[in-house]
Length: 199
Image 1 (cartoon, rainbow, N blue to C red):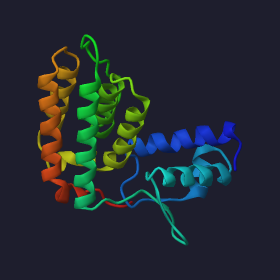
Image 2: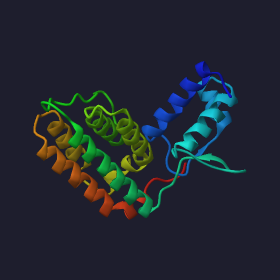
Image 3: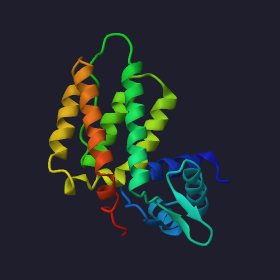
């Protein structure tokens, strides 16, 4: 196994790219090419990919190497439903005065902005396990989130509305907007599952 001072940054870099949806579902993650990109040997890349496989963020088959998971409509529907449940828990666990949520700015793309919004909301619950679960679901959903504009014409407006609601102190409007967001995607899961194409 690679030393931690090499493995951890390699793992973090690959996980960040998965969370950002940089690779489409089904994309083959070639360890040698990734090692060249990251400026490390192949060993920490393989170790990181194996770790990500254990987290279900990467798939591995003997003789086939590593790939970004491809979800079918049923898998995608279930993952959106799970993400919705996690966000409901996060909203319920927020305690004390409901202060405005700080959402990091300066990031582009619907997938990344959506992950940052939901991650920021989850962080207000003060539960590290919940944060990890939300982040893991985001990594699985983001390749599909990046393609949502081909199914929904108002994704930017929808996201802007939720960001605005998250900055305010009222709980119910945000809970309702989060519910609408997930309901729409569960209904469109079959169409969304066929959008991202392998490179």
